[in-house]
Length: 483
Image (cartoon, rainbow, N blue to C red; front, side):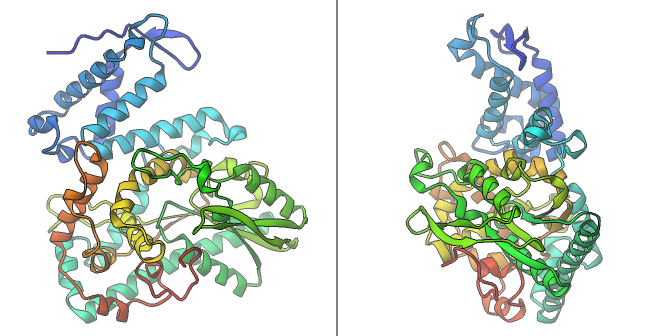
């Protein structure tokens, strides 16, 4: 039986009132679910939607619409004709219902589209994006498809096949070599594209951007080395040094800080600093002390006219960061761990989420170099995903080149280093920390399907300049703030 809808009107962005049409919400649910592979794969035992197993997609969408209506009905302010819910209130409630009921990946698909549209409406002059740059719900589908095709050709597109490869040292060594060569070939293509763009207009800024633990630091160093070998002069700015001091970051009820938004950075100072450097001025650079959580004075910096400034940042594509600099003198590279592997023998067509690899990489980095409890890292991950969906993925379409930083051997190697650190399911409650609970549950299920390999073999076979070394240790590169 449908829930009575007590919301008569909603307020549009223009301020005009319009009838509340629940059919539009139903279509949103169905569209996002199709993008994510359907509702059924996300129904969990801990949710009241477990009774919907086997139901038609349309039936589940109807239940979700009722859920949204109940949430809106329960807000007394929305029942007054003078204070109807806004479009944003409706969208926030849609996201709340999806996430709180366990449909987290479906909520992700909806949010990237939602925020992409916001940036299109904002316009480029206000830090937004062009319509043609709109990524919609494309979470790197082309790169995922490219990854799957590469894996098929190399006989490692399923966990079953990978399990056979990694226990054979010779085959495992060959897979490591080939995977790294594929990654390196993309860097060569990116450098060639940069050179072509540089011929047309003198590039002054080179951004290496991408979500947390995608391998930006090693990638930055490798590209800088390639360009130096070609005669380019390089200067580097550490965007992390522009973090606001710890006391200026709000804290949630779990005593966690939200560092994952561009607003955790002093964007005005970044923009001003870069503009001054490009004008040839000397600038006193900040230095962020990660031990004290304070921004301090650093060294003075000046950039020559023939130097290319490198910036390695989560939010390098976010236009407000360098809104005072013309796009024509920027080269923007985006990197993400897009490697995709089918579950089991592949018959289920269930792909292992590449986002989980980044979570595990970050868990290792935070534990080894920042003394963070793995439970804290997993509990914080919902902030990382929020930053991805709101401020990183909608800008992917503005990149000049996209690199797949995933490796075919990621899962087995990462498991070798994290299996003894990874939190137990009992560390999180499905009622208060559902996002973390579901991620732990999913990753532990994946771990159970992977054969174990010794860390010693990984240390022996994986080159010291591979970007996975940022996380497992042993990198030849100096990783900032990993002290």
